[in-house]
Image 1 (cartoon, rainbow, N blue to C red):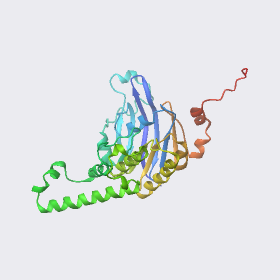
Image 2 (image 1 turned 180 degrees about the horizontal axis):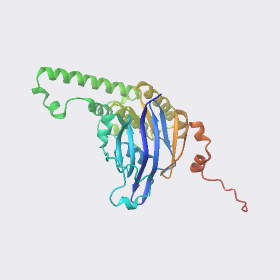
Image 3 (image 1 turned 90 degrees about the vertical axis):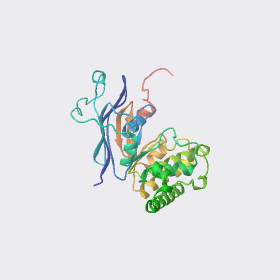
Image 4 (image 1 turned 120 degrees about the vertical axis):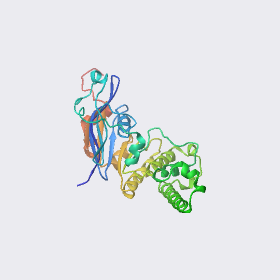
Length: 295
């Protein structure tokens, strides 16, 4: 039986009186490619931000590799203002609110709906910088390496060599090695997306979260991205959670799909089940008017 990599229990994210995510529970198992979809404003990116520590949830728990990493319950004024469910479920448990960098070190990496690169740096340095997350020396040791002993310098040399080889490999896998010396902001939009994925992979994640990876891509690029997502899942032994509006990509690459609507879970199933689900069709296309009004 495959291991449970990510689990959300009763996650609610409330901003004042607005409930952006309402009592969301889902599981993502090892090796799966799972899509989280829904109309604009459904709460998908808010869910990502809660999983990765950008937001502290108003209520609920996030577990990663079987361990609780995020947890909260309504507190202070929110006790009275809370509109979600299960308000008392996690009250007796300690609050867990790690920063995004700590969650990254646990083995979770993400891309963003709005691309976030080191725009004035080269493509190569964008990925190399992320690779340094696994180095076991700090910036001061690096700056003063000339005064270090020969044993430490040898260690530093081989680590740097390995990180540069890893950077080269990732850029070649993503198909942007030839652009390695370009300033990141000068890349075409689709290639910037690929660079952001390469930078996420540089942190050696177990779970990769992709927020609208096909945004800005033409049909040919989107088709190639489908194959690329499968390739990196298999090559790096990853589990993948995707937010995406491009339904061709979602239906062709996903093992399972979760649907959100107005922050609430609407449906879960295989691509075939989701495509034929009348509630999902209504959420995306609207309910057909069966009235007998005059033409």
